[in-house]
Amino acid sequence: MQNSRPAPLAGLRVIESSLLGPAAITTHLADLGAEVIKVESPAGDYVREMTWPIINGVSLLHMHVNRGKKSVVLDLKVPEGAELYRELVRGADVVVEAMRPGSLERRGLGYEALREINPRIVFCNISGYGATGPYSGLPAHGIAFDTWAGIVRPETDDDGFCFLPEHASMGMHAGPLLGALGILAGVVRARESGEGCLMEIGQSDAAAYMDWYRSETWMAYDRPEDEVTGNKADNYERREPGTAGMKEGVRYQVYESADGHVLFMASEQAFWKNFCVCVGREDLFERWPGSKFADHARGNRELQVELRDIFRTRTSAQWISAANEHNFPVAPCNSPRTLAEDPQFRDRFPLYGHEQHGADMLPFPVKLAGETLPVPAMAPTVGEQTDEVLRELLGCDDERLAALRATGALG
Image (cartoon, rainbow, N blue to C red; front, side, top):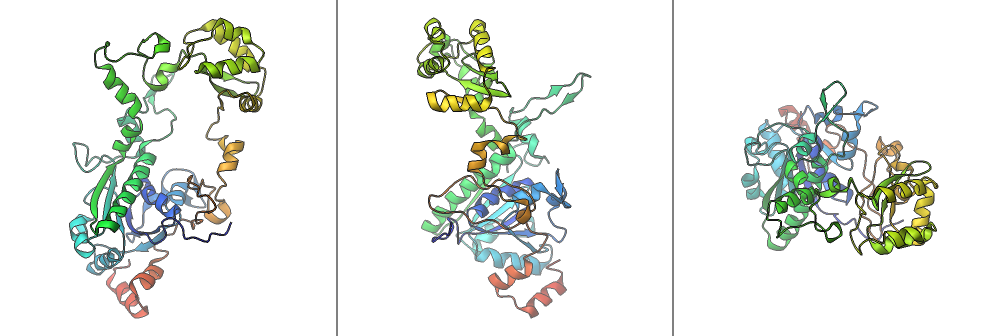
Protein backbone atom coordinates (compact mmCIF):
# COMPACT_ATOMS: atom_id res chain seq x y z
CA MET A 1 0.00 0.00 0.00
CA GLN A 2 1.45 3.37 -1.01
CA ASN A 3 1.11 6.10 1.60
CA SER A 4 0.09 9.57 0.51
CA ARG A 5 0.65 10.97 4.00
CA PRO A 6 3.77 11.09 6.18
CA ALA A 7 4.07 8.69 9.10
CA PRO A 8 2.24 9.82 12.27
CA LEU A 9 5.44 10.87 14.03
CA ALA A 10 7.37 12.11 11.01
CA GLY A 11 9.24 15.24 12.03
CA LEU A 12 9.69 14.15 15.64
CA ARG A 13 13.38 13.91 16.51
CA VAL A 14 14.60 12.00 19.55
CA ILE A 15 18.13 11.93 20.94
CA GLU A 16 18.57 8.75 22.94
CA SER A 17 21.24 7.71 25.40
CA SER A 18 20.49 4.16 26.42
CA LEU A 19 21.75 0.82 27.60
CA LEU A 20 20.00 -2.53 27.25
CA GLY A 21 16.24 -3.15 27.21
CA PRO A 22 14.96 0.28 28.35
CA ALA A 23 15.85 1.49 24.86
CA ALA A 24 12.48 0.03 23.87
CA ILE A 25 10.94 3.31 25.03
CA THR A 26 11.86 4.85 21.68
CA THR A 27 11.23 1.73 19.58
CA HIS A 28 7.53 2.57 19.69
CA LEU A 29 8.28 6.10 18.50
CA ALA A 30 10.57 4.91 15.70
CA ASP A 31 7.94 2.41 14.56
CA LEU A 32 5.54 5.33 14.18
CA GLY A 33 7.98 7.31 12.08
CA ALA A 34 10.02 9.34 14.55
CA GLU A 35 13.71 9.92 13.86
CA VAL A 36 15.55 8.31 16.75
CA ILE A 37 19.27 8.95 17.05
CA LYS A 38 20.92 6.57 19.49
CA VAL A 39 24.05 8.22 20.85
CA GLU A 40 26.51 5.57 21.97
CA SER A 41 29.89 5.61 23.64
CA PRO A 42 32.84 4.37 21.60
CA ALA A 43 32.42 0.98 23.31
CA GLY A 44 28.80 0.81 22.18
CA ASP A 45 25.73 -0.53 23.95
CA TYR A 46 26.52 -4.06 25.09
CA VAL A 47 22.88 -5.00 24.46
CA ARG A 48 24.22 -6.55 21.26
CA GLU A 49 25.72 -9.36 23.35
CA MET A 50 22.97 -9.80 25.94
CA THR A 51 20.48 -12.63 26.40
CA TRP A 52 19.54 -15.18 23.78
CA PRO A 53 19.10 -15.97 20.98
CA ILE A 54 22.23 -14.60 19.31
CA ILE A 55 21.67 -14.34 15.57
CA ASN A 56 24.78 -14.11 13.41
CA GLY A 57 26.64 -12.75 16.42
CA VAL A 58 24.04 -10.15 17.43
CA SER A 59 21.30 -10.47 20.06
CA LEU A 60 17.63 -10.52 19.16
CA LEU A 61 17.12 -8.00 21.99
CA HIS A 62 19.24 -5.44 20.13
CA MET A 63 17.65 -6.22 16.78
CA HIS A 64 14.17 -5.57 18.18
CA VAL A 65 14.58 -2.62 20.56
CA ASN A 66 16.96 -0.67 18.33
CA ARG A 67 15.34 -1.29 14.96
CA GLY A 68 14.65 1.80 12.91
CA LYS A 69 17.19 3.90 14.83
CA LYS A 70 20.41 5.62 13.79
CA SER A 71 23.57 5.03 15.81
CA VAL A 72 26.03 7.87 16.39
CA VAL A 73 29.20 7.43 18.40
CA LEU A 74 30.12 10.38 20.62
CA ASP A 75 32.53 10.29 23.50
CA LEU A 76 30.77 12.56 25.99
CA LYS A 77 33.87 12.63 28.20
CA VAL A 78 35.58 14.67 25.49
CA PRO A 79 34.48 18.34 25.39
CA GLU A 80 34.02 18.27 21.64
CA GLY A 81 31.82 15.17 21.96
CA ALA A 82 29.63 16.81 24.59
CA GLU A 83 29.33 19.91 22.42
CA LEU A 84 28.14 17.81 19.48
CA TYR A 85 25.49 16.32 21.77
CA ARG A 86 24.29 19.82 22.61
CA GLU A 87 24.13 20.69 18.92
CA LEU A 88 21.96 17.64 18.27
CA VAL A 89 19.65 18.53 21.15
CA ARG A 90 19.18 22.05 19.79
CA GLY A 91 17.20 20.65 16.87
CA ALA A 92 15.43 17.85 18.72
CA ASP A 93 12.07 17.42 20.42
CA VAL A 94 13.00 14.76 22.95
CA VAL A 95 15.98 13.53 24.94
CA VAL A 96 15.72 10.04 26.39
CA GLU A 97 18.04 8.89 29.14
CA ALA A 98 17.43 5.15 29.31
CA MET A 99 19.82 4.37 32.15
CA ARG A 100 20.30 5.34 35.77
CA PRO A 101 18.97 8.83 36.59
CA GLY A 102 21.63 11.51 36.46
CA SER A 103 23.88 9.75 33.96
CA LEU A 104 23.75 12.65 31.52
CA GLU A 105 23.83 15.29 34.22
CA ARG A 106 27.22 14.00 35.33
CA ARG A 107 28.45 14.95 31.85
CA GLY A 108 26.92 18.42 32.09
CA LEU A 109 24.05 17.31 29.85
CA GLY A 110 21.16 17.13 32.32
CA TYR A 111 17.74 18.64 31.79
CA GLU A 112 18.52 22.07 33.23
CA ALA A 113 21.57 22.45 30.99
CA LEU A 114 19.77 21.22 27.88
CA ARG A 115 16.67 23.37 28.36
CA GLU A 116 18.91 26.44 28.11
CA ILE A 117 19.79 25.26 24.63
CA ASN A 118 16.27 24.14 23.71
CA PRO A 119 13.44 25.33 26.00
CA ARG A 120 10.97 22.99 24.27
CA ILE A 121 12.93 19.84 24.97
CA VAL A 122 11.07 16.95 26.61
CA PHE A 123 13.57 15.05 28.76
CA CYS A 124 12.56 11.57 29.90
CA ASN A 125 14.53 9.21 32.08
CA ILE A 126 13.57 5.55 32.25
CA SER A 127 15.33 3.43 34.83
CA GLY A 128 14.81 0.35 36.95
CA TYR A 129 13.26 1.78 40.12
CA GLY A 130 12.88 5.43 39.17
CA ALA A 131 14.71 8.54 40.33
CA THR A 132 13.59 8.50 43.97
CA GLY A 133 13.14 6.05 46.80
CA PRO A 134 15.49 3.66 48.62
CA TYR A 135 15.97 1.45 45.53
CA SER A 136 16.70 4.26 43.06
CA GLY A 137 20.40 3.41 42.85
CA LEU A 138 19.98 -0.35 42.95
CA PRO A 139 21.23 -2.13 39.81
CA ALA A 140 18.68 -4.50 38.28
CA HIS A 141 17.54 -6.37 35.21
CA GLY A 142 14.04 -6.62 33.76
CA ILE A 143 12.76 -9.58 35.75
CA ALA A 144 13.48 -7.73 39.00
CA PHE A 145 10.55 -5.42 38.38
CA ASP A 146 8.16 -8.36 38.07
CA THR A 147 9.33 -9.96 41.33
CA TRP A 148 9.21 -6.54 43.03
CA ALA A 149 5.66 -5.94 41.83
CA GLY A 150 4.48 -9.37 42.95
CA ILE A 151 3.70 -10.45 39.40
CA VAL A 152 5.83 -13.61 39.51
CA ARG A 153 6.42 -15.81 42.53
CA PRO A 154 9.45 -18.04 43.15
CA GLU A 155 8.80 -21.76 42.78
CA THR A 156 10.63 -24.78 44.16
CA ASP A 157 11.85 -27.78 42.19
CA ASP A 158 11.78 -31.44 43.24
CA ASP A 159 15.19 -31.07 44.90
CA GLY A 160 14.03 -28.18 47.06
CA PHE A 161 15.80 -25.42 45.13
CA CYS A 162 14.03 -22.18 44.28
CA PHE A 163 13.75 -21.20 40.64
CA LEU A 164 12.21 -18.49 38.52
CA PRO A 165 9.11 -19.81 36.72
CA GLU A 166 8.41 -18.99 33.09
CA HIS A 167 6.34 -15.86 32.77
CA ALA A 168 5.72 -12.93 30.46
CA SER A 169 7.93 -10.05 31.60
CA MET A 170 5.85 -7.02 32.50
CA GLY A 171 8.06 -4.17 33.73
CA MET A 172 10.60 -4.25 30.92
CA HIS A 173 7.80 -3.95 28.37
CA ALA A 174 5.25 -1.79 30.19
CA GLY A 175 7.82 0.77 31.33
CA PRO A 176 8.89 1.72 27.81
CA LEU A 177 5.32 1.67 26.54
CA LEU A 178 4.00 4.00 29.25
CA GLY A 179 7.11 6.13 28.98
CA ALA A 180 6.52 6.61 25.24
CA LEU A 181 2.95 7.69 25.99
CA GLY A 182 4.24 10.23 28.51
CA ILE A 183 6.79 11.53 26.02
CA LEU A 184 4.13 12.16 23.39
CA ALA A 185 1.97 13.98 25.93
CA GLY A 186 4.96 16.16 26.79
CA VAL A 187 5.66 16.91 23.14
CA VAL A 188 2.04 17.90 22.45
CA ARG A 189 2.15 20.38 25.31
CA ALA A 190 5.61 21.66 24.39
CA ARG A 191 4.51 22.40 20.84
CA GLU A 192 1.54 24.38 22.15
CA SER A 193 3.25 26.17 25.03
CA GLY A 194 6.89 26.38 23.95
CA GLU A 195 7.96 24.80 27.23
CA GLY A 196 9.38 21.34 27.62
CA CYS A 197 9.46 19.25 30.76
CA LEU A 198 11.42 16.71 32.76
CA MET A 199 9.76 13.35 33.35
CA GLU A 200 10.86 9.97 34.61
CA ILE A 201 9.44 6.48 34.89
CA GLY A 202 10.58 3.42 36.78
CA GLN A 203 10.04 0.06 35.13
CA SER A 204 9.07 -1.27 38.55
CA ASP A 205 6.36 1.42 38.77
CA ALA A 206 5.05 0.34 35.39
CA ALA A 207 4.93 -3.32 36.42
CA ALA A 208 2.89 -2.42 39.51
CA TYR A 209 0.64 -0.12 37.48
CA MET A 210 -0.12 -2.83 34.93
CA ASP A 211 -1.09 -5.23 37.72
CA TRP A 212 -3.28 -2.68 39.49
CA TYR A 213 -6.34 -4.93 39.62
CA ARG A 214 -4.81 -7.44 42.00
CA SER A 215 -3.06 -4.96 44.29
CA GLU A 216 -6.09 -2.66 44.44
CA THR A 217 -8.33 -5.64 45.20
CA TRP A 218 -6.24 -6.54 48.24
CA MET A 219 -6.36 -2.92 49.37
CA ALA A 220 -10.13 -2.99 48.98
CA TYR A 221 -10.33 -6.21 51.02
CA ASP A 222 -8.55 -4.44 53.87
CA ARG A 223 -11.76 -2.48 54.35
CA PRO A 224 -14.71 -3.87 56.38
CA GLU A 225 -16.66 -6.73 54.80
CA ASP A 226 -19.90 -4.79 54.97
CA GLU A 227 -18.32 -2.23 52.61
CA VAL A 228 -16.42 -4.51 50.22
CA THR A 229 -17.86 -7.87 49.21
CA GLY A 230 -17.47 -10.46 46.50
CA ASN A 231 -19.70 -10.78 43.45
CA LYS A 232 -23.42 -11.45 43.64
CA ALA A 233 -22.98 -14.71 41.68
CA ASP A 234 -20.69 -15.99 44.48
CA ASN A 235 -23.20 -15.07 47.16
CA TYR A 236 -20.96 -12.05 47.87
CA GLU A 237 -18.09 -14.25 49.09
CA ARG A 238 -14.73 -12.60 48.60
CA ARG A 239 -12.56 -14.41 46.07
CA GLU A 240 -8.84 -13.96 45.58
CA PRO A 241 -7.94 -11.21 43.12
CA GLY A 242 -7.68 -11.78 39.40
CA THR A 243 -7.00 -15.23 38.00
CA ALA A 244 -6.09 -16.62 41.43
CA GLY A 245 -9.80 -16.56 42.27
CA MET A 246 -10.68 -18.56 39.16
CA LYS A 247 -9.09 -21.89 40.05
CA GLU A 248 -12.45 -23.41 41.05
CA GLY A 249 -14.30 -21.95 38.07
CA VAL A 250 -16.24 -24.33 35.82
CA ARG A 251 -18.10 -22.23 33.26
CA TYR A 252 -14.98 -20.09 33.06
CA GLN A 253 -12.11 -22.55 32.80
CA VAL A 254 -9.50 -24.20 30.59
CA TYR A 255 -10.57 -27.48 29.01
CA GLU A 256 -8.73 -30.12 27.03
CA SER A 257 -9.81 -30.31 23.38
CA ALA A 258 -9.18 -33.16 20.95
CA ASP A 259 -5.79 -31.68 20.01
CA GLY A 260 -4.86 -29.18 22.70
CA HIS A 261 -6.69 -26.85 25.08
CA VAL A 262 -9.23 -24.05 24.91
CA LEU A 263 -10.43 -21.44 27.38
CA PHE A 264 -14.20 -21.51 27.93
CA MET A 265 -15.67 -18.23 29.21
CA ALA A 266 -19.46 -18.59 29.48
CA SER A 267 -19.79 -16.54 32.67
CA GLU A 268 -22.79 -14.65 31.23
CA GLN A 269 -26.03 -16.59 31.25
CA ALA A 270 -26.80 -15.76 27.60
CA PHE A 271 -23.47 -17.17 26.43
CA TRP A 272 -23.96 -20.27 28.57
CA LYS A 273 -27.34 -20.89 26.97
CA ASN A 274 -25.92 -20.47 23.47
CA PHE A 275 -23.25 -23.05 24.23
CA CYS A 276 -25.73 -25.59 25.57
CA VAL A 277 -27.90 -25.19 22.47
CA CYS A 278 -24.85 -25.56 20.23
CA VAL A 279 -23.81 -28.90 21.75
CA GLY A 280 -27.38 -30.19 22.05
CA ARG A 281 -27.31 -30.18 25.84
CA GLU A 282 -30.11 -27.80 26.82
CA ASP A 283 -30.54 -30.05 29.86
CA LEU A 284 -27.35 -28.57 31.29
CA PHE A 285 -28.81 -25.09 31.07
CA GLU A 286 -32.12 -26.18 32.57
CA ARG A 287 -30.35 -27.80 35.50
CA TRP A 288 -27.73 -25.10 36.09
CA PRO A 289 -28.94 -21.84 34.51
CA GLY A 290 -26.71 -19.73 36.74
CA SER A 291 -26.87 -16.01 37.42
CA LYS A 292 -27.21 -13.46 34.66
CA PHE A 293 -23.65 -12.15 34.98
CA ALA A 294 -20.24 -13.22 36.32
CA ASP A 295 -21.27 -16.77 37.23
CA HIS A 296 -18.45 -19.30 36.91
CA ALA A 297 -20.42 -22.21 38.44
CA ARG A 298 -17.65 -22.28 40.97
CA GLY A 299 -16.85 -25.66 42.46
CA ASN A 300 -19.54 -27.53 40.50
CA ARG A 301 -17.57 -30.73 39.83
CA GLU A 302 -20.55 -32.55 38.37
CA LEU A 303 -20.90 -29.92 35.66
CA GLN A 304 -17.14 -29.81 35.19
CA VAL A 305 -17.09 -33.54 34.38
CA GLU A 306 -19.78 -33.00 31.76
CA LEU A 307 -17.89 -30.11 30.18
CA ARG A 308 -14.58 -31.98 30.28
CA ASP A 309 -16.08 -34.81 28.23
CA ILE A 310 -17.84 -32.44 25.82
CA PHE A 311 -14.74 -30.40 25.01
CA ARG A 312 -12.68 -33.49 24.25
CA THR A 313 -14.98 -34.28 21.30
CA ARG A 314 -13.75 -31.46 19.02
CA THR A 315 -10.45 -29.90 18.05
CA SER A 316 -9.54 -26.41 19.21
CA ALA A 317 -10.16 -25.03 15.72
CA GLN A 318 -13.60 -26.66 15.64
CA TRP A 319 -14.48 -25.07 18.98
CA ILE A 320 -13.38 -21.64 17.72
CA SER A 321 -15.55 -22.10 14.64
CA ALA A 322 -18.56 -23.19 16.71
CA ALA A 323 -18.10 -20.25 19.09
CA ASN A 324 -18.06 -17.85 16.15
CA GLU A 325 -21.20 -19.37 14.69
CA HIS A 326 -23.24 -19.72 17.89
CA ASN A 327 -21.96 -16.67 19.84
CA PHE A 328 -20.25 -17.96 22.96
CA PRO A 329 -16.70 -17.12 24.08
CA VAL A 330 -13.92 -19.64 23.53
CA ALA A 331 -10.24 -18.81 23.10
CA PRO A 332 -7.34 -20.95 21.92
CA CYS A 333 -4.55 -21.72 24.38
CA ASN A 334 -1.38 -20.92 22.47
CA SER A 335 2.19 -20.84 23.70
CA PRO A 336 4.95 -18.42 22.70
CA ARG A 337 6.25 -21.21 20.49
CA THR A 338 2.96 -21.93 18.71
CA LEU A 339 1.48 -18.42 18.57
CA ALA A 340 2.92 -17.62 15.14
CA GLU A 341 0.86 -20.44 13.62
CA ASP A 342 -2.44 -19.08 14.92
CA PRO A 343 -4.61 -17.77 12.03
CA GLN A 344 -5.55 -14.61 13.95
CA PHE A 345 -1.88 -13.91 14.61
CA ARG A 346 -0.96 -14.46 10.97
CA ASP A 347 -3.69 -12.08 9.89
CA ARG A 348 -2.78 -9.32 12.36
CA PHE A 349 1.02 -9.58 12.46
CA PRO A 350 2.73 -9.66 9.07
CA LEU A 351 6.23 -10.18 10.42
CA TYR A 352 9.28 -8.12 9.64
CA GLY A 353 11.34 -10.90 8.05
CA HIS A 354 14.84 -11.92 9.07
CA GLU A 355 16.09 -11.46 5.52
CA GLN A 356 15.80 -7.66 5.84
CA HIS A 357 15.84 -7.19 9.61
CA GLY A 358 18.15 -9.88 10.93
CA ALA A 359 15.35 -11.57 12.87
CA ASP A 360 11.65 -12.27 12.43
CA MET A 361 9.94 -9.58 14.49
CA LEU A 362 6.44 -8.42 15.35
CA PRO A 363 5.51 -5.00 13.98
CA PHE A 364 3.99 -2.17 16.00
CA PRO A 365 0.38 -3.27 16.68
CA VAL A 366 -1.50 0.00 16.07
CA LYS A 367 -2.98 0.10 12.57
CA LEU A 368 -3.99 3.18 10.60
CA ALA A 369 -6.90 2.87 8.20
CA GLY A 370 -5.74 3.21 4.63
CA GLU A 371 -2.10 3.67 5.63
CA THR A 372 0.93 1.58 6.42
CA LEU A 373 3.55 2.47 8.97
CA PRO A 374 7.13 2.89 7.77
CA VAL A 375 9.15 -0.31 7.78
CA PRO A 376 12.06 0.18 10.19
CA ALA A 377 15.63 -0.41 9.13
CA MET A 378 17.69 -3.12 10.76
CA ALA A 379 19.10 -2.20 14.18
CA PRO A 380 22.38 -0.34 13.63
CA THR A 381 25.93 -1.33 14.32
CA VAL A 382 27.82 0.92 16.72
CA GLY A 383 28.16 4.36 15.15
CA GLU A 384 26.85 3.22 11.79
CA GLN A 385 25.22 6.59 11.00
CA THR A 386 27.69 8.91 12.77
CA ASP A 387 28.91 10.69 9.64
CA GLU A 388 25.46 10.68 8.02
CA VAL A 389 23.76 12.31 11.03
CA LEU A 390 26.48 14.90 11.64
CA ARG A 391 26.51 15.86 7.97
CA GLU A 392 22.72 16.09 7.57
CA LEU A 393 21.76 17.61 10.92
CA LEU A 394 24.79 19.68 11.89
CA GLY A 395 26.25 20.46 8.46
CA CYS A 396 29.61 18.90 9.24
CA ASP A 397 31.91 18.67 6.22
CA ASP A 398 34.87 16.37 5.69
CA GLU A 399 37.24 18.85 7.31
CA ARG A 400 35.24 19.16 10.51
CA LEU A 401 34.64 15.41 10.73
CA ALA A 402 38.38 14.81 10.42
CA ALA A 403 39.08 17.40 13.11
CA LEU A 404 36.50 15.84 15.43
CA ARG A 405 38.02 12.41 14.98
CA ALA A 406 41.39 13.84 15.86
CA THR A 407 40.03 15.05 19.21
CA GLY A 408 38.54 11.61 20.02
CA ALA A 409 35.01 13.02 20.13
CA LEU A 410 33.82 10.35 17.66
CA GLY A 411 35.65 7.51 19.35
